[in-house]
Length: 57
Image 1 (cartoon, helix red, strand yellow):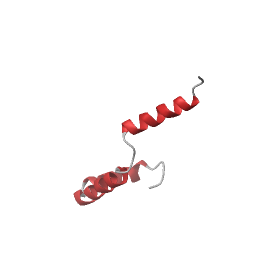
Image 2: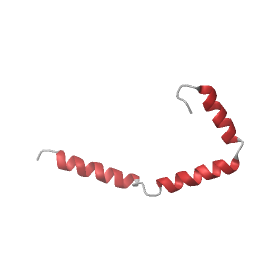
Image 3: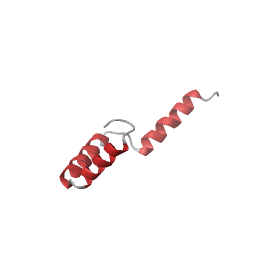
Image 4: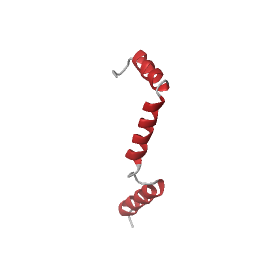
């Protein structure tokens, strides 16, 4: 979809709203993609470890 074309975005949203099968496919694909992402706790621990490495003693 071209950037800056609200009509194209509106059309895509309307089509998606009318297509429960496609919505379910996209939801499943999103869950599959994010399954391997770090958790919030993992991310916080990583950021804190970076701070610990960079902080002067």
